Length: 80
Image (cartoon, rainbow, N blue to C red; front, side, top):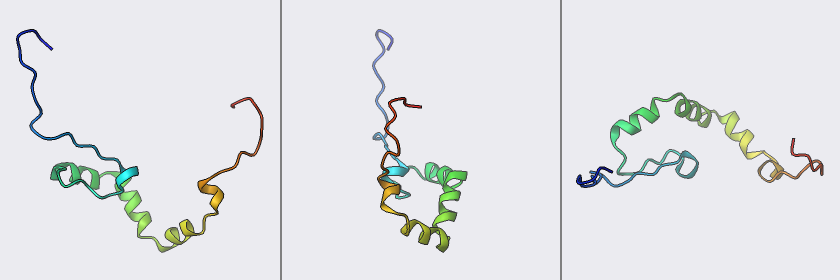
């Protein structure tokens, strides 16, 4: 901040978005150009393609519980 110059205030409210938390449910106040950029990204296209594949969706349903909650396979104290 420079002395004598007032701090600028943002024109819009802060926008927080996470694919992990929100999937692809974009916030209402997200500008259309941001939504467009996300939808044109390779990451978005890969996830959308996978979601439309019935074999992929079925394979996700069949995952064993330990995939989500893995158990340690060794008790070695060395972390690598």
